[in-house]
Length: 238
Length: 305
Image (tube, each protein chain N blue to C red):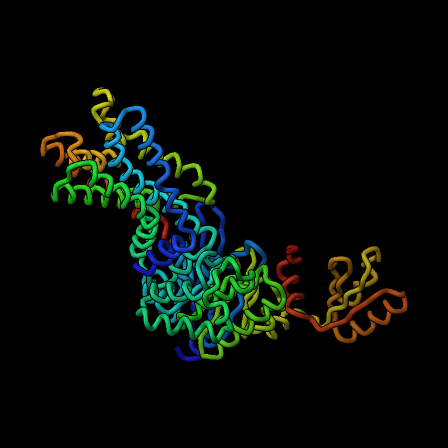
């Protein structure tokens, strides 16, 4: 698996390092506008949001990368007909895509550490929220990739999914800003749960341990559903 | 696997896609170990479907297939340890080097890192790719990129190598280089299954072959056995399209061939026809029948490239 991370994640970054900026620009832009128009106190929300958005942006790319390897390079066929398991292949590719977000993850984690008060437990909660985001979005990305007939099919989906999961969902803002009557809609997004966990872990919103437990349970359940769906619907051996 | 044993043993293989396209309709064939077996056929004949089933990428709708004695459905994991595939129109990653491709492929196949490095360098040397070891594939020609994929597959030292149209789109020199690689690999006792629609490629490389058309096997055997399927030994091509074909019909089987007319005939018929054409001032060429003649006879005119 590590060799796939090196081959499909680290090597392309080494040869084209500016590609990492691609995943930082949008969250930083949102942070900038929130800072300018809503002030520093609200901008802190954009730090946790930025962390989630960087992970979403780098992991949803798995959708196009997996389709590119399968449909254009046809390298997936070489791996299918080898002793490599489907799970190792998918996990390796998803970890490789996460490498694209490393700079953003480090940046937003550092900013969170600087501008919020995070306890050791809070740090652990943020790490778990990041893992939940990585796994769920990677599963979603790989599942979508297997339905593509052409990589062009997917060009439209990545930005749409990214916007829906990172910017429309309550990732950069507290869920309390959504009217109570329609708040349930926010819980249809897998990124709502990790974003809420991060906002609570950084003390941006205060919530009971029951709410925190609900967000963890929701995030993990959502992740399991997406992983199971990906395993069931994805085409490895056709 | 003994050189004489069957590496591929397919029985009544069928594949119908969800779109209701029947890609394979009862194909049975056996491939002996230590040989090159070529699968010929026009585009859409079912060649790639056949090799994808053999390579455990696709599940058949019916029939059975064994590779190296193992069922491709029930024992796919064992089969995968012993085969390697170069897919049709596959390409390497442009930002990575040949060495990085081979190393990654070998480690993914289960080799430890040190052994994989050694083997990657060895295969690059044996395929004359050492000078490109650290060149990113974006800077390699199409032929070299194809050799990178072949190098990946060959580095596995798999008992069965499946090459799906390995020379498509390559210039003549690059094709010859691929042919040499194939010959080298088989000389080590391994088996190669390749698909192609280049008749000269099959004739040059294959110990035995099969012609497949519309999902059905139409001929199988060694190149000379296949050529004997025709009742004629010679092919005469007359450069004319306006000539009334009925004048040629007594000599054998007449068909249009590009800007000329092809007549399949006997040795005596070829001699008589050539004399006749020369008397009429027509340009004429005579040769022994080739696989291409059999192919056209079995499946019709090849599609233009």
